[in-house]
Length: 286
Image (cartoon, rainbow, N blue to C red; front, side):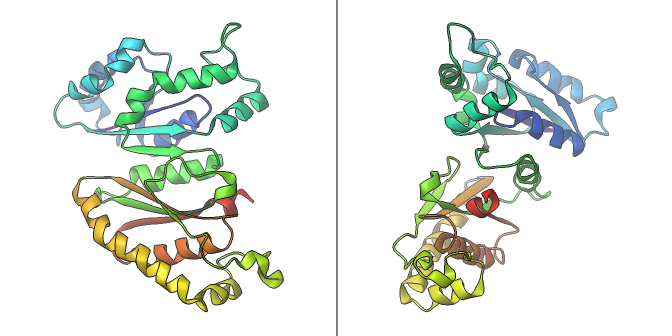
């Protein structure tokens, strides 16, 4: 049986993720009391649930504190034969505050004694046991609803062989480091096409920018150094039963150097691994 547990801070996109899994054929329940999870799993082994791809449940901070603290023990109590994945969604505090301000929704933990900013911090503390046990953490700060749905399809569902899913993501340091990065490479030591007037409005996907960077020996040396590291250690990550790997490549603005290197790494490793994905965070945000 396939079981997906979705959790995360309010405003991070849990409902969007649950709706996507429902569209993919999962039996979905929102805001399930964590203590009822074993009973739900037992029930979904029945024949009347056989036509579902699996079960997906959303667990939030409104659960009993003790149940949240006992999250790993509850998972261990599930019946044999359950293939469980835990998806934890999060976003930067500023992004969550902005979302609540725009929608005028009330945070489930906030009241006249606990302002919104404090409620957001408190929620992260309550959900720490689930975040620590997550098989996939997604930072949705820069994701649209459609990009989040795509990420669920690509990275959580994947294909039937359960091979490790690898995401190469370019980003700009001036907009913050991706919170869900497993490995991060800083490429700001390369010459910056931003300072060439003709290249400033282009990206690392445009041929003139590629030619500019490829004319520098340092570009090839850096690519080879990163590739040597990944060639050595990616198989070890895969052999350790890791399901997901996010490799972030950053430059100042996330438009030229990091885009070029992330794309080049993606093109290189898509020939070696069955599930390799690419995302340019700042290009999507613009």
